[in-house]
Image (tube, rainbow, N blue to C red; front, side, top):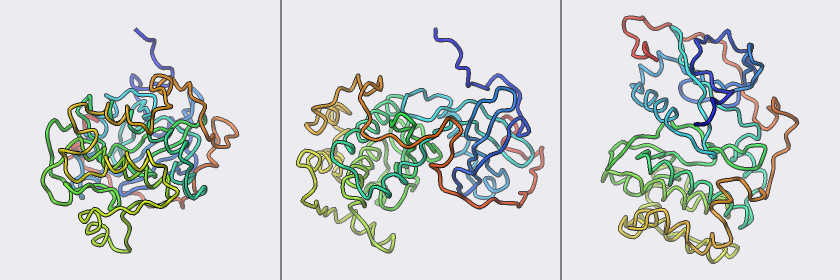
Length: 326
């Protein structure tokens, strides 16, 4: 039995005053994520702060409760850890691992595109994450460069499990980012684990080319292109990478890699990954092709700047609080 993680705060009664608030690392529909320091231990975290009233109004209570339940269940080297949660009359809080290297999206945009070897390194980590999540019947459903962080060691950490869901067979809710939505989601046929493998195909293409395969000014235009299924591969695309992307971006679920009888092994054994040891990857023994510039554990310079919000959301009546047991 492994010893208790010294970062874990789950057995403590906490309040927002137990943390020194730092820079905002990201914002979303219901709140923001801030860099914080736990006053008692001096340890650094990312504190996700969500407005209760907004979540209730938008009927997203189940999504948020599900996100917490899923994060509590997950334990993987390439997934952001959750170290605790608490709430008050206005907010719910999730204490997350702080990933110092910033958003993968920022690094990809700065580089323009990634070389084949670098794309392979990241693609393998996402494949390993999805294989692990699917073994627990968790479908992630929201892969995009903005939801991937890069740690100081150059390895990725997947974050934002707000759309993730326990799905044994299929579900029907439309969610995801337009460029990454799988055809079965658009056609409302019911979807499950194969959507994640589709999004991996989109990510690999975007890493290698610098933009996703289906782009348009208008979301409806994107959806039409996804359903038409025509993919243009520029000459710079490595032959084996192209082969794998074609197998992942299969509208026919009976042909999509990850959804055949060998499951994730079809992806892991593909020629694009032939130089890669999956055991060494999981143990982080492979030298990362890129490491972000990090000045220390508390460095927040790899994250963009966001304006602060002064407005206080309304408090929720304790008698009507769906998060009372949070």
